[in-house]
Each structure stands twice: as structure tokens, then as C-alpha cells.
Image (tube, rainbow, N blue to C red; front, side, top):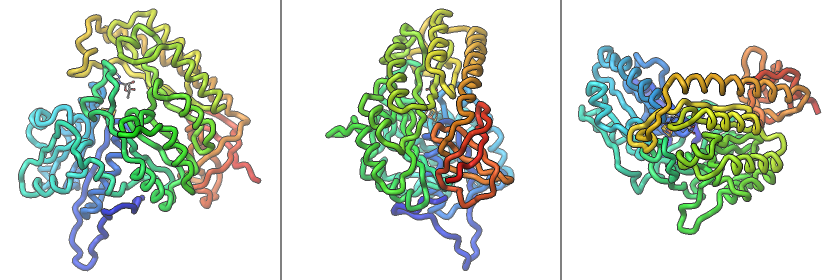
Length: 459
Ligand code: 5AD
Ligand code: SF4
């Protein structure tokens, strides 16, 4: 799907000259911000006449959009580079590009580690410089542009359309970077300080997306709830939510990721008042121990987090909650860990993303004494997953007999598939393809942890 919105449009194949279009293979690691960045990169490459391939062996350009949040993604990127470099044996003119967070963190060092095979390198700061970087690489020069901070023209990247996999929902980056100083986190190093995208640019993109058939919009930012704070005249995030809801055709709104203290009462009120806001929220808590939260530089306590959750449940009845949690942060004792399990029992998350603490170069926690041994982290992780599995099974059952609102986005083998407002996958036996792209009530007959099965409710 192309959001054919802004100044720079994808090129159409020139059938008359019958010139072969260059092929690009893109592999994306990491978070939804990276997914959205890749969609924008695809828009830029399409405007340069590239076509997309799922087979790296036939690519003229291989581009890895990387993540470095934990050690594992770092290793994955290096392993993939080792494989993809073989493309140069098949096609000596093929170029290899690396962008995203690992590129920003390591810069030229990454090229050295990969054996000098990288032709193009940039980060989330300068996606819009890709056309010039490609020209340089075409001339056989190394096109490595890792900037120390985001350039002034950063927002120009939104002049390119995105190319999305799904026609009915879209990610929209509304802010970049993060001003928090969580002691475990590499993101402020790789994505810079917080900067909010201008409101006009956001609303314009949403209007065009809606014209393109999009029903659900998913606002993105490392710390989305802090949007608007950095403007000369600050604007509350809740104001943006009301403005988006006023746009004709916006049927569902989601936002990720929020930070507990920035999820202020006005945002919770807006979530209750705006019917289009989905009944789901991802709100990382990271640890249930106040001592560990302090060491992490998270500016809330377990009690304050639980109070926020209570308010959310009151403002948006039936809200499905999810979170991120870190196990084995330096100094975490058994007692601290039990506090984390207690949060799971009290909130009853419907989905939980749990990570073993991974020391990141240059972050304060990597230098903390009392690093937790890996076997202890693994053992705690197993216990956490056991508790969470039980809770998820119990929570899933509550959907049986309930009616949920589903945006159908796919048809496959006699089944319509979509997501409910609570962010659950829902499957219905039906051939009514005309319901694709529509929000439809479905009565759930059977619920598993990840999928709800049901029938369309006929009016
Ligand atoms: N180690 C483990 N998990 C981490 N996260 C961020 N940094 C680290 C780290 N150094 C997790 C947090 C964050 C999610 C995106 O990744 O839970 O919310
Ligand atoms: Fe990975 Fe964080 Fe960068 Fe997203 S912002 S790609 S999670 S390092």
C-alpha cells in the first residue's frame, strides 16, 4: 500500500524503455519505530524507481535496518551481514547498506567488524539523505553518514510517502528520541533527545492516510505520551488525541509506547472520552521493586504504577494491558523479583514482553556492581513466564461469550482475520470479503491466549 500523500511520489515503471528496475531487499530488526522507518525507506526507494524483493540473492541493494537494544539483536545483525555479503559474489555491483540504531551506535566500527563490506550507512536521523547516499555509493565510494545529532531538516523525511503491508491500518511517527535517562537503555544514544513532530504534519499525514483507506492509526514514539512538551508553546498529548479523533474516517486510534508518569490524568480522561481510542494500552513497568526502579532511574514507584492502572481500568472498562519488564537488573534480589511477580498478579497483563537484563555499552547500569549471573536471570525468567502463562490463560477465558469489535484486515482459506479493539487476533469462518477494512462486532465462542474464534453478529 502506498500512502500517496506528500510531495515525493513513487516512480512508475517505465514500460516504454523497458529498463530493468533495481531490486532492493530490506530486513528490519527491532521495534515498531524501526518498522515505520523501513516503510518510509521503502517510500524513498520506490520514488527512486526501485522494486522490492524477498530474495536477497537477487538484490541490487540489501538494506538492514538494525536494532541494538540488547546484545542479541547486535549479534543477529552481524550474523546476517556475514550471510548477505555473499550477494557481492553473485552480483559484484550489489550494494550493502546498514541503517538504524546499531549503525548509529557503532558507525564505521561496524563496517570494520563486518570486514569492510558496508557501502551505505545512515541512521534514523537522516533517512531522507538516502537518495544522495545511494548516488555516492553508485560511484563506488563509501557512503557512510552517521551524524552526532539529528539534522535541522529531519522532518523532511515525512515528505516521502510510506509503503505499508496493510491497507487498513498505519503507523505514524509523532515524535522521536527520548529524554528519560533509564540507566539500562541505549535508546537516548541511538535516537537522540525528544523532539515532537509538528501537529500540522501529523494531522496532514493522517488525513491523507484516511483518504487512502486507512481506518486505524497507530501513533508511535519512544515516549509517545511526552509528545508536545518540547514545543516553544507546549501542547498536551491529550489535545493531539482529540484533534485526531475529529478527523473524518479515523475509526480507531492506538499509541505506543507510553511512560507511566507522562500518562497524565488528562490523557486517561481522553482515553475514556474518545470512543475511537482502542481498549488496549502498552505501559512498560520494567520492575516491581521500588529499589530497582530507583536504580533504573524510572521516576515512579510500584504503588504509583498500580494507581495509574486502576485509573485506566476505570476510565476504559475492559482495557487490555500489556507491558515490558526486565529480569535480573544489576542488584536485583529474590525479594525484588517477587515484587515484580506481584505486579503481574495485580495488573493481570494480557501480554507481557519480558527481557533478561543485557548490559549495553556506555550505559550506567552496565558499570553497576552486583551484575546478576545469567543462570539466576534464566531461572527468574522461567518463573515469571510460568506466572504470566497462567494469568494469560485465565484472562483469555473472559472473552468467551463476549462481543468484540474487529477490524478485519485479511482473508485466508475461508477465514476473515482481524484485530479486536483489545489488540487480540480474531478469526471468523466467513467468505464475506466485503467486510475487509470494516469494524464488525464478533461474538467470541472460543478463546485461546493469542486468538479469539467467533461469529459475526448480524444486525
Ligand atoms: N536489557 C534488557 N532489556 C532492555 N530493554 C531496554 N534496554 C534493555 C536492556 N539493556 C527492554 C525494556 C524496554 C524494551 C523495549 O526493551 O523493557 O521497554
Ligand atoms: Fe531497537 Fe530501541 Fe532502536 Fe527500537 S529504538 S530499534 S528497540 S534500539
